[in-house]
Length: 223
Image (tube, rainbow, N blue to C red; front, side, top):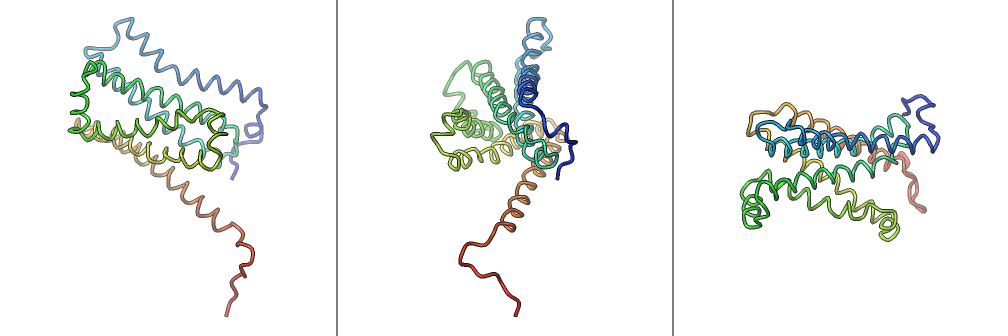
């Protein structure tokens, strides 16, 4: 299935490189906005809450965009989208790190005892911290050198953790918003992530069915 026109599917390498920088610049816009609002006093009556929600929201947005790369590539035929995926995933990790830094710094001033109590007692923080821990090995192995050291199959197996990390992020977001009776947006994210994961399962199953039978195996015959 290749819904995109040929001109969008077959971009020149230089154009793809330019788009990589464009995507990176766009991913930096939320941070630039936060900095600008901070200097101009535009973070509202509760700056901590504003920063926490902004970094958390953009973490989820970028993880979902990263997860959407493969379905979009398969549907549109724009294979160059794969060159954006690693950068988008790293930017999601960057915003996740800012989100968690806000929690341990401004919320608890690096009081490890209080931080641990919060993680244990509040399920939505437990889930968020778990997502962060799972994301660290993905970020640490995101370089070409680590891909070569791990080998393609092991690297791909490790990075399938994204299929667990993103649902954990949605659950964290859901529990946070549910306490404020705001479930419309978390529900939308849950549906979108569910659809993207379901598509992957369907494509994997279709690939298995199309795979040739192992050598020495006779095709099934009708009685």
